[in-house]
Amino acid sequence: MQKSKFGKPLLLAAVLCVMPVVALVPGCGGGNNGPSVPANAFVGNYTGTYRVTQGPSTGETGRFTLRVNSDGSASGSVTDAGGNTANLSGTANTSSGAFTLTGIFDATGTTGRATGTLTNGSPVTGSGTFELTNGNRGTITLRKS
Image (cartoon, rainbow, N blue to C red; front, side, top):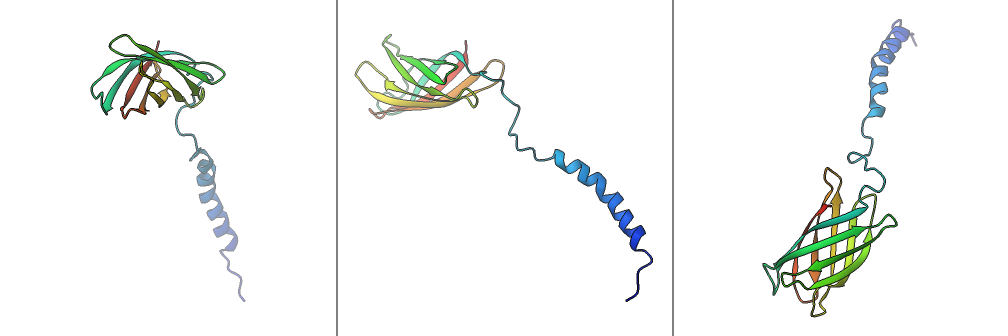
C-alpha cells in the first residue's frame, strides 16, 4: 500500500472547514417554543365575556370572570344578561396559563366545564371554551384587570 502525500494537509483542511460549522450548530434547535414567561405572570384577576355559540341558548352573552391564585387554584363566575351569577372553581397552571373551571353555570342548576389558556402579553389575555349539560357550548374571552 502506498501512503498518500496529501493525507495530513487534506485532513487539516477538512478540520479547518468543519470547525466553524460545528461551533455554530449548538446554538440551533434549543427546544424552547417561544419567549419565557415570568414566574406567576398569570396570577391575578381577569374579566371578559362568554358567548353561547351552539345549543338551546345560542346567541346569549354575559360576563365571565377568572381569578388565578399563586398556588394554582382558580375561581370564577358567570353572570347572565338577567344578572344571575353562578360561581365556578378549578385550577390554573401558573406557568403555561392553562385553566379549567367547573361548577353550576346558571340559576337552573346546569353544570359544566370551561377550559382555556391565558397568553402572556401586554395585557395578558385569555380565551377558551365551555360545554354545559343542557347542550350549550360557547367561547370565552378574557383580559387581565
